[in-house]
Image 1 (tube, helix red, strand yellow):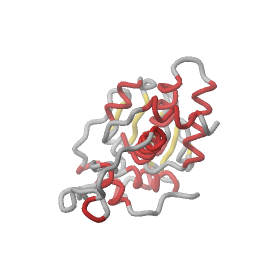
Image 2 (cartoon, one colour):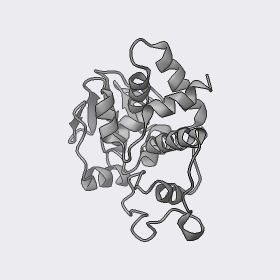
Image 3 (cartoon, rainbow, N blue to C red):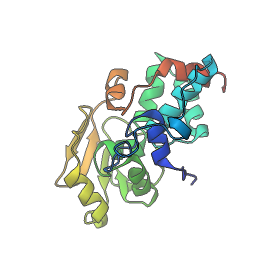
Image 4 (cartoon, rainbow, N blue to C red):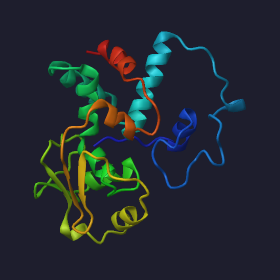
Length: 208
């Protein structure tokens, strides 16, 4: 399965935030954007603003692939209700993201790897598809054979963030549950940097 392999620290510096939740914040030693003289800012066109907001959103969810982002928007558009909220709910309820929110991994990329390598179960069955949509009531658990994995144990021991209100966590048994579908405000509260969601939707509307 394709995944982002580019320079992650450059992306964090570009947006001025430790967007991937790394233990070593890349902004401590290099707080300026990449490029000569800190990449001087220029006035952006409307398209440029939309593109940057879309790139910020992709970064927040572990450099999700463009195809998957567009597909999530199309499915959100087909649902009743507010498209922006439906869209963000779909992204927030991706299995890799839920694993990250439950603190089973230090970074969103670590969570993607856990899922892809078959260490995660949904309602007792292995699921290795990162884009799998977790629904309220579903139980997300680490496979018993993986409970002693160093990466998982360290992530749970060193995590300084609390589990969101819409998730329930059982640390002793390494499992959790999605209690309810998060609303837009809750999702935005989990993002490492502000993203203008309606602007992203405007951009993606031209891709459908």
